[in-house]
Image (cartoon, rainbow, N blue to C red; front, side, top):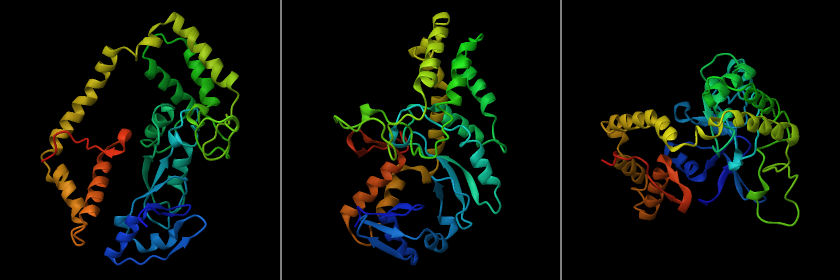
Length: 317
């Protein structure tokens, strides 16, 4: 039972959380689907019975209403950790503002539910900047200023701006409604003699743009610019530059860590103790260990060996 999930087109939560509803006296109709081996939960029933203060909806489908409940417009970029060039600048600028300004909107914020951060950083940047603007950002002017911040060269070659202009109007202008995710490289798939290319749907390998004009052309422009400005290739790769750029953030993190250390609510020991207390009534040590595992993973998870590793440095109280 614990391995099953509550699923429909809106709701996706662990069944353990659903079972805990009993503690609050909440009765929500559910049904079991033999075909999908999933528990099916009515979204409207759930939202109608859960107290709003206990509910936080992370929307992955850019809807405009959740029966009046507060919800967060989330961008799911690089779905599945896919690394292909892909994005839709207009979707993360115009669409959330339209949802925010729609009649009777209960949208309460912007959020990222990314499953990969190794590429397409311009999509993350513009979306997070959009959260601070009440009107949609101008994509072309944003790309131009973003390129200037990215390379930090006083006399940036015009070919660099031209390269990113091409990318923003092709690879980052995906208007294909059938594209469900960022393009997946065939190198990430299980070896096979056939069926690797031109996949569509869940993890597509079909490239929705012409690579010669969309990718190869900008790359040639960047190579041309780097011959005249070698720093385009080396500035962000030099260890000293990386160290210097990261120092302000590290200072802020250390100060924040010291500040949180003064608040009992942020002590790791209290966090773990509270998680294990949920199993106190059943006196089930195995269940308590499971709850502690999930509590650790909520803080930070390093999945190299599928173990939860806590990332709070000093707050071990």
